[in-house]
Length: 328
Image 1 (cartoon, rainbow, N blue to C red):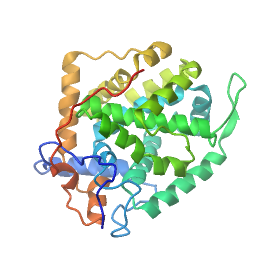
Image 2 (cartoon, one colour):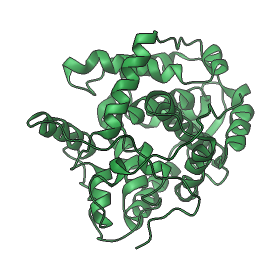
Image 3 (cartoon, rainbow, N blue to C red):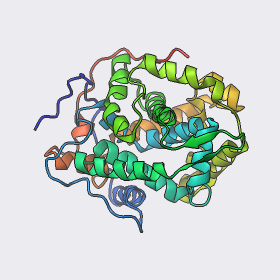
């Protein structure tokens, strides 16, 4: 079985993985499993078929980024903010999904789809994406301003793909560890196979293409009451247990902080974080990056490929020169 990445992503992680003392480890793993495999949804195994590769290789930058729950939450919120800023995407999301009525369940479904796309066996990921594309074919309508929209529109799919890549990448760089320009480009190229399956044939594959995508979309972005309603839902939805709800609200603000300054200005959003809040998030992000969750998709995907649970956590980190990576 081959797990090397021809693009040379540089499989990397911090100082090595660790497990918490029992019962803290079991509690966290049960929370993660409950979020990824919620009751009432068809369970998806990341252990099967044994030996089958994913759409993205195990030594990829993507496998490193998506194993971090803090980066996924912050990056996911940032991505949805960018999506809701575009009126056609906003109408499709808000009028045809359950974000407003069942925010946690919607997040669970979105999170599970992301996990399958990155860590699931190729055949499992392809089947899931085909089902999502069929659902997209039925999502169409007209915005409040009278503009027609369709969730199968390649231009809108390209924007959704760009926002997801931007959110996850920036959240990881800001609150876990910086990535080199080479790693950033690798991450964008790694997303291409899934993007093509989703129908996003023009999704950005490099930093330059990402900047071009944002520049082209800039005149279309606008503030809205729906965007502020979404942020209110994300602050109050029971995503984390009650004792951790202040951290959840902080992570929502952290999502706004990683948006380009001109986007925050256009959307009338405040992305200010105090220095101690930044330090707290980076400490939490660094810890989350090393905490091995044995029942979570990253570890199970490793076992499917005959790799140890700690594969993504114990690899040496290459020496790199970090960079902000964008020129907005």
